[in-house]
Length: 513
Image 1 (tube, rainbow, N blue to C red):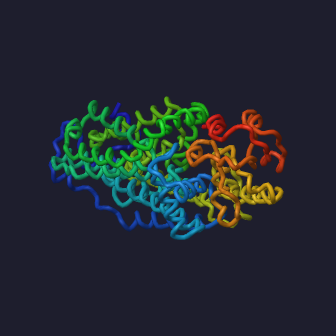
Image 2 (image 1 turned 135 degrees about the vertical axis):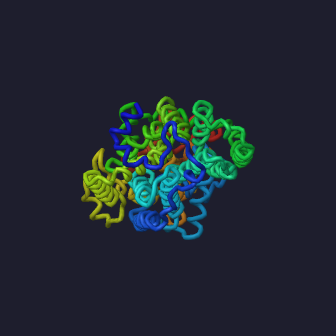
Image 3 (image 1 turned 90 degrees about the vertical axis):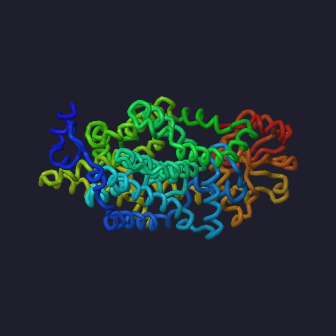
């Protein structure tokens, strides 16, 4: 099977100097890996990072960003219902440094995207990729949804970079171990990166479980007994203790997020489609299709089989547990890097060079079309399909927050002044509440409450609030708790007056996930 794979891909063109079965390899040959191609890598990463910075300034907040700013600014905590504390804390810090600046708010996500590109290039270097493979790997990562989502500051734009760096450290340790000169500090650093990842999302333990399992099957089993690995694990665990205490104190609310995510699962076909498109149709998907099997079949890459197998296990875990398709973002880097090494090795052939050049050109066009670097009037005229994402989608998502805030202000201003001291704003969903609270310093609106997900833990309306301006569709339970209701804004805002049930009793009944 391996011979057929090598012949199909023209492996003879790229395996010069790579270990073949039955051929011994000296430490000197192993150490002769390419230098880091910092110039081309930084050129790609700098260009993409600049594009992200330009794209950050326009349109407006995404609703998740509004939530993170409010959560960190007004409700800073060691834990939340729906994520660990790092992203809300970062959002609050950025907002404090430059209030209202989208460019500053999104700077951590931009830096994470750049870090992911550099990390993917470094993985390609560990696989033996040179000045062509390394920037191609970085560019392929840039064409994936990992970088597109970095337009926003969110957990899903920050965590993939941690996975890329973690996988790079594991791959580098594995290479050095195969050469007989393992550097166990890399395993400790992997633990530190894991500690950071655990402050963003709780997904990274799945990767470690998979790595441990596949290392037992494929090797290197030696890794599992290294003290530095377990010291790193101890650091990661210790860093997570405050969040775990918060979770325990609040009856482990994060465990309910799996139910929320599973309920939103779009189906097997859609999950697979989104995962494939997320890799990047023009560049990333072909590289993944080439790189993933190559990690099993190329002789020199035998030590890395456990990494490739672990990525497959994690992917299957997401599928079985009905995870979100963007969870796959952290899995792209190693297959992209391997694919870049294979493809650039084939570029001695003119026909292959033409195909690669065409793919890179197409990937560039798709990236430029997707990133919202255009004036709103221009972006609104771009096509937006299920296959090709363009900046038009960002116009819809990023302008919703400001438009919604204006509608709520108008609805609140229309209420009788004498009633306002007794009115609380209650939102059906956390995005609605976050939008109100994000701008309330400018609008003068009272703070918002919501029984939805994380906002449930941000407090209950005061007992002095005998009426509410409800944003959303009132439930029968809510309507029954008031003597009367009146539509203020059709399909959005309802005034309910004459509360009959204490908030301490009513609020838990309204809780929703």
